[in-house]
Amino acid sequence: MYETYYHLNAKPFQLSPDPRFFFGSKGHKRAMAYLDYGLSLGEGFIVITGEVGAGKTTLVRNLFKQLESENIVAAQLVSTQLDADDTLRSVAASFGLEHEGISKSAVLKNLENFLHAATSQGKRALLVVDEAQNLSPRAVEELRMLSNFQNNDRSLIQSFLLGQPEFRNILQSADMQQLRQRVIASYHLGPLDALETRAYIEHRLRTVGWKGVPSFSDDAFENIYQFTGGIPRRVNTFCDRLMLYGFLEEKTAFDGAAVKEVVDDLRHEVAHQDTPGGAVLRNSGTTAASGAGLSEEALQLASRVEQIERSLNRMLPIVRKILFMVSDKQAAADTVEPDNKP
Image (cartoon, rainbow, N blue to C red):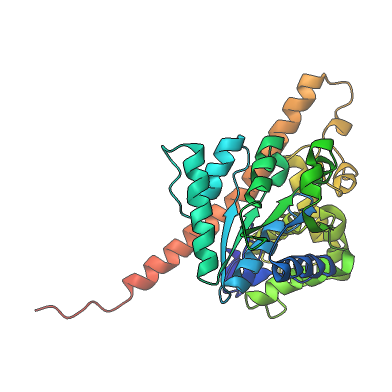
């Protein structure tokens, strides 16, 4: 919607991972270096952890893009809230192998045959496991056992494990000792700093044809960083909302006050946001503060009513703009000369 208003050729702050938007911050470059290092060795486990929305999946997408021209057969396992047997079958499915209605031993045999066939063709198998913190100890053990498939003392499969920070604690548990011995490198992906957050926003905008409109003041960038904590997904979510706000208000420049207004809107929509920018929200004033003496139920109702009113006030301009756009298109169509008919 706002892409046309700001003359952009695509949505700059989409949430779905896209390697086109990969931003090489110091942390992301280092994480990619670990992945590349792991690939060069061709065996063992590489572990990458990071907060929710830190960009781990984007790393994988960027890696897969680089692998298109290499002799690597890569598969990704995302749904990790599975038991051990289902995890093994999901691995087989990720490589396109038969896995349903057959025994576990048959699944393992299919995997072993596939890995040997790939090796005989000069290819290597790579398994990327996302959300690894959800794996049960038995599921992790199944993945470790896959590394026992070898050819001339070299493992036939390599695994990258990506997870949230708690996965680091899981790896330190006593029953993970054998896996730890096969981890050849690990890295924790932290948030962007203030300068990187600014560069990240500008990078995503330039990727879709940004020519400086809308512009961002220094305090706008600073407020965005304070609110999002430098977590890329939070930056995307907030900036998408900021761009929508700019479209509705017909703004071509964002300053600190504009960012603050969007922060206030979000505060009323989602109470007590658990983000590094929570202090910004909490300090922006509350409905309860003006309702001293009311019961808790009355305060909650008043807050809810205010939230609905604010949401409606934001939605009405959107509806009007859409109606105007449809009306203009219809008017333009009505002015076109009709085709000559016999």
